Amino acid sequence: MGAAPDHSSIAILIVAGGRGSRAGDGPPKQYRSIAGKTLLARTLHGLHMAMPEATLKVVIHKDDLDHYAASAAELSPSDLERLLPPAFGGASRQESVRNGLEALAVAGAPDVVLIHDAARPFADAALIARAIEAASIHGAAAPGVPLADTIKEIDDSGAVVATPDRARLCAVQTPQSFRFDIILKAHRAAAAGGRDCTDDAMVAEAAGVKVHIFEGDAANFKLTTQQDFARAMELLKRPAFADLSDIRMGQGYDVHAFGPGDAVWLGGVAIPHTHGLAGHSDADVLSHAITDAILGAIAEGDIGAHFPASDPQWKGAASSIFLAHACELVRARGGAIANVDATIICEAPKIGPHRERIREKLAETMGVEIGRIAIKATTTERLGFTGRQEGMAALAIATVRLP
Image 1: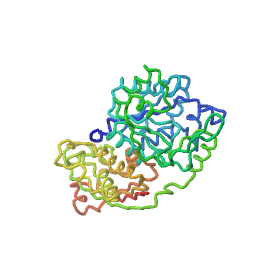
Image 2: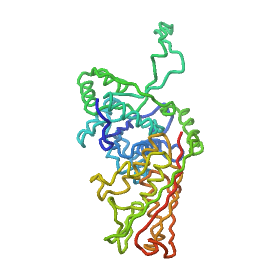
Image 3: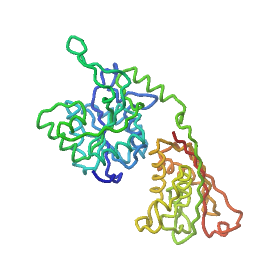
Image 4: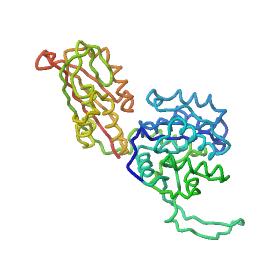
């Protein structure tokens, strides 16, 4: 149905209005703490990490504003940047989704919307990428996983009446993905016709839309019972990167000359100085070196291959755009950035007073823990172009882990 949309035209609608009674006593399951963070906060953080450019909107029960606010307070500033105010749900999941879609339409309809259960915190970047691609190509899609057990159809007495061919069946998950105009129209039609559907794919089917099944993920299970919460706890206790055994390293190096200005950009932070740095973009020498190191680790060329200086749209652009793009390429492969170690080479300005702010900004841009970013600075004892204060240089090494 056309080319993949720009990531800024993607919204993820998270359905969090249920009561979750099968999870046992306590608050609704999406607000229960799991390994120190509420289930909803974990799901929102995971979705933001998987697709940082997507807009996020949560549909909640009207009585859960305090619970929602507490979960939102657990999110990082980066997570919150793309989070819209919540919408209120209805009497059923179907009505809640429609309310959320209508709210997105008022805010500015996206091209593609992913509809996801708040109780599925393990949707990764690869699954989200498949969902977006499937919606872009087919218009309506849902992730499915093969069935491991034989399925029996039974009558009211419990007697078997049929054994469907397991090869033609699958278990359907979320996020289910749609071109926004298709699913909004389908939900409006379902409401007008009084149809009661069990998921959004069924809503689309009822409107005559063919739904495509793309590859799901067995790890993307829904937390429904206390046993599910116990299983999730075990997964969260596993060592970081346990399944990412392909370890890659890349190195990056960049140089920029001093030019007119009163500040230099380093790692997305403006550092006051007697000069600026000259370049086609904002000349952030540190971000450029780290970006090239990450791209090198996954053999994806360099900044120039992705953001050529000959393209006027990158004139004066923030280098955080380049760095975020490189990190997204890693996540799209199901990988993660394990460590970045970078050195800034200059006589001035002094880096020490700004080091922690630079680390914080890089961690936010890259979507990693600050403890995985090391920033050092050195001089060349007044030797060479940096010693003569003609410019700055930066070196970086990135360690990336892939499945």
